[in-house]
Picture 1 (spheres, rainbow, N blue to C red):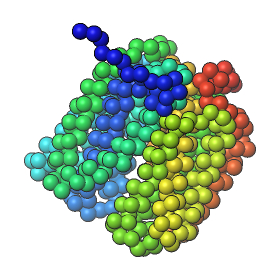
Picture 2: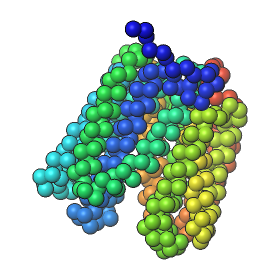
Picture 3: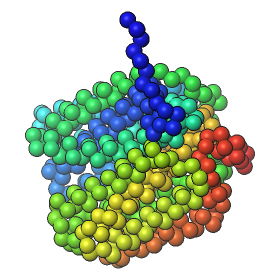
Picture 4: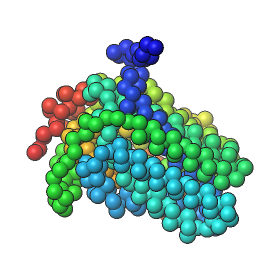
Length: 425
């Protein structure tokens, strides 16, 4: 029997990353894992509110997942550099599957309570804290350097697709009971683990430096010494921190736009659809010139979109603003991920990816907190508008204080490595 024909891809194909079997396995594992997480968190939020009726407990659901990132990012990054990343990923997904199994058993037996859910969420957060840097740092090993940008774009697209589909699927299944959502998540985690184990790449440069405080801090020091890395992840931190208007969507839908629950769903979905379309566009038309300026510009556009959304009393204008927000965000994420992963040597990618992950996690979680606090004291509309103005200001400020970031031109792997990897050593 003849060997099956391998899929053909044109050199410039927008799907060229999928030419590589390991990347296909990784992509499927990541999409299924994110889909399972999104479904599970949707069901958990509903279940927690049904159990306690307290909005604060919903906030604690997010806190239980974020705190492990904050407390373990230095350790998890070092682990991703010292051990095979594919093995770390498979162990972490397996732990997430066990957490879903625990939620399923608690729900079926009628023993679900908030303390137990919160405790399991901490273990889920720990697994994700170790998974994130390993998952980010492995992508450059799965494809040739000339296909890396396409792989980043498709990774982001898959993430957005899973984020959009997860809550919707969970919302339908939850009608039959939360346990069916957890059961579905278990199956997805099983397949995610299998696909992860099918990744065969063995090109990771394992760090054998002694485990010392100084070496654990190396990733943070590396990022802080390089304007491009600290500038790009810092820009994301402050932009999302100040522009966290999406946390206030229920208030806009109910009290300002008067569109009810259906309108709220449309507002939330439009933001994610904008991000997905932006990411899909980048798979076909990657950024090749003026990357630094485009990163700063898209963050400024993100801020302007926040301002428009804040002042809008038209449902359709608000939808348009949220679509632009999502699309601009996907472009900035694409550029940032390329810069961070390419400039960082492989034996340090885990530690630097962990630093990036905690910055991003902090921006999302703290951004929601900032929006809630400022809305409480200033009012909802002023809080959103001021946040948008702050985001535009941060973009301009970073353009001035990080000239190396502003001047990045090509995202070509060799160009970036040659010009920036050893800068400031």
